[in-house]
Length: 294
Image 1 (tube, rainbow, N blue to C red):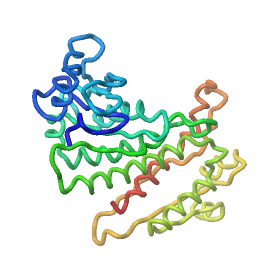
Image 2 (tube, one colour):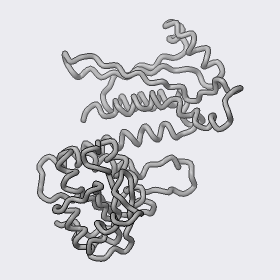
Image 3 (cartoon, rainbow, N blue to C red):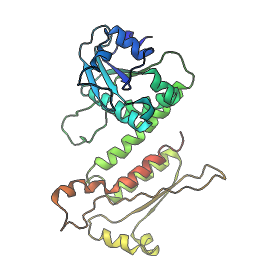
Image 4 (cartoon, rainbow, N blue to C red):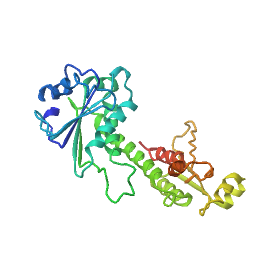
């Protein structure tokens, strides 16, 4: 189905600085009376990475609203830039509940990265975009999408599996963000270790948690000394996957200090706000391990 004919709340159009003369995005532009291409002659939208242009109650298309997001020059665009740009557009579209979104990519962008990578990125971004740092707010500011559709010009056998894989990656990103954004009152050495063990049980990983006695036997005096400044005892967590046969051994080591109060006598007060994120390394390692079976 042509993108201009898709019934949805939001149609996101992903375009480089130079709009392709033919293809699905050019077709949307034609349906909208060249509203996208003509906007690039003005100063408000140039198609650079994360540039956003919104048409509310758009004309010429079935979608209620159209969001055009730039990714810069195709030759300079990488997956990181493409992901950041798509997330910026998606977060604009999920500020109310029960929203549906459809996404169409410029043909040159699809050609550069391939359908499989585009589909995986789609699954990742529509899953992770609605998750933000406002977990303690009385009211949410972003909501999961009711429906998300990737608009392609033709059927592709690998696209569905790639979208599923991307959604799993998005869930892993959400896991990491949730762990990092929670305060030390919720995420402390004990509760973090409990979550890690629960994840290991779910995925069939080996888990080992070292408490005070085991840490003393391992001569981890520095870690125990730091923990004496906290109401919570120290924990060392090890998760292991041994399903690769004779494959190489890979170790991920993530710092897991759930609140870094060290140096509080010289730290400015603003710096203390982010000290709950001193366990982001351990959270990232857990998120990566959650992807072990994809």
